[in-house]
Structure formats: structure tokens, C-alpha cells
Length: 220
Image (tube, rainbow, N blue to C red):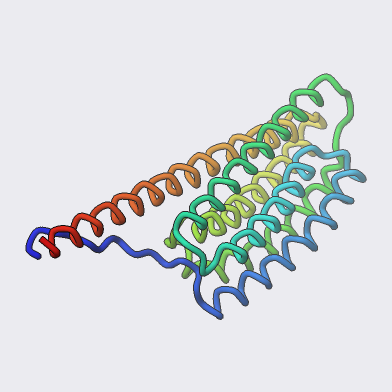
């Protein structure tokens, strides 16, 4: 029927054996780096490393949820993306609160450990980024994976800069500043994910209404 648009914009939804294999590899990378970086953050007394380690944990959980959502309905995938966005908000607020608390605690982090671990983490994240590069423009569920990997790479660079600043200033402020900026990055990415997921849910609802209208019109 002319003028009756029963279709909709389609985006990659993750239904691909190759993509799911890549996700398993990226999950393994992130889970390993979470364990390693958590230990390093304790030894080095670095809040920036601790924030980055938490980001690795969040990514591992995010990618696991993404795997569960693949192949399910638009509503289910969008809901999973919103859940991941809320999780990122919780992580961002936790890092922000911990950083504000540490402002009143003395102690300069070990810049050598900070820089070395951040460099290793950056290498691990660049592998993930390159693996996921071709899947950065999918639906909210798929895009959340790309945003998390991108956040990690940016965070690692920031930690390396903080390590250099700590070395030059012998102050804990660069470390705390980077942890604060990373918490803001978590919150920003969460906002992007939730907004896209809500748009996809609304768009899907509109398509269903449109298809129902088309069916009624065709019967008439």
C-alpha cells in the first residue's frame, strides 16, 4: 500500500558467529586484566588504576550480558543495554565517591607501577578495540561493547599521563584527577547507551503500531 512504511532502520544486532567469538576473546582479556590491575592498584596505592580495574570488570560483565542478549527481541536487547548503562552509572558514582574520599587521605601512588600497568592495559585494550572496530555502529547492545572498549583505551592513556604527572609533582592529585575524569567518562557513556536503547525501544514500538495499521488497512 502506497505511503505505508512497515519497515524500519536495521542495525547489526550481534547475530554472527565471528562476532560472538571475538566477544569471548575480549571477555577473557578484560577479566584477566581486572585481576592483574586490581592487585597492582593495591600495591601502588593508585585510585586511577583502581578505577581502571573496575572498568575492566564492568566490561567483562557488559560483554557477557551482550552475549546473552544476542538473537533476542529488540525489546530484550534494548533492556539489556539500559541495564548496562545503569551499571556504568553505578561504577562512575562509586569511583567518584571513592576519589572524593581519597582527597582527604595522604599518600602518593607509586608512579612506576602506575605507568607500567597502564601501558600493559593499554596494549590489551587496543587488541580489543581492533577486534571490535568493525562492529562499532550496531544497535545499543552492540555499541555498548565498543564504547566500553574505547573508554578503556582512553582511561589507560590518562593513567599513563597521571603517572608522569605524579613523578614530576610527587603529589597524589594527578592520580585523583584522572580517577575523577574516568568516573565522568563512565557517566557520559552510560547516558549515550541508555539514550540509544530508549530510541530503539520507541522505534520498535512505532514499527509495530505501523505494521498493525498496515494490516488493518490492507484488510479494509
